[in-house]
Image (cartoon, rainbow, N blue to C red; front, side, top):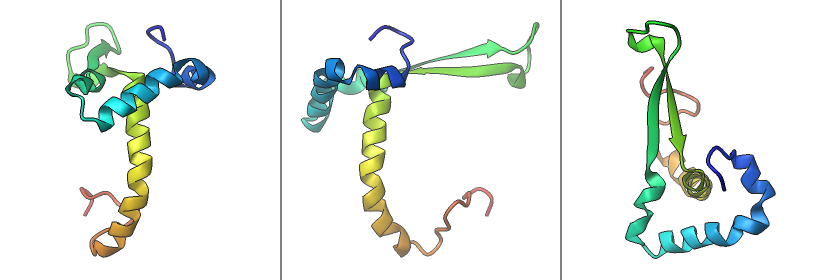
Length: 102
């Protein structure tokens, strides 16, 4: 897939990229050390206005590997069912409540 391709395009191209994505999951399950490249991101600050000098004057932009986003989504979805059984055992847990607000 070319740079800048949105995740939705991956859905449309599923038959073409399925083999490559499955290979990533197989390598991940096998503990392949070369998968660190999936977890790399590019970060830059784009000025919101001319002569930006304060942190608030910049917009952070992260460029994340789409394959990494797919792996993260699959893992989060699978962990959701496991965590559902653990959360009732956490007496301090309150759904939709920020820990920092307490």
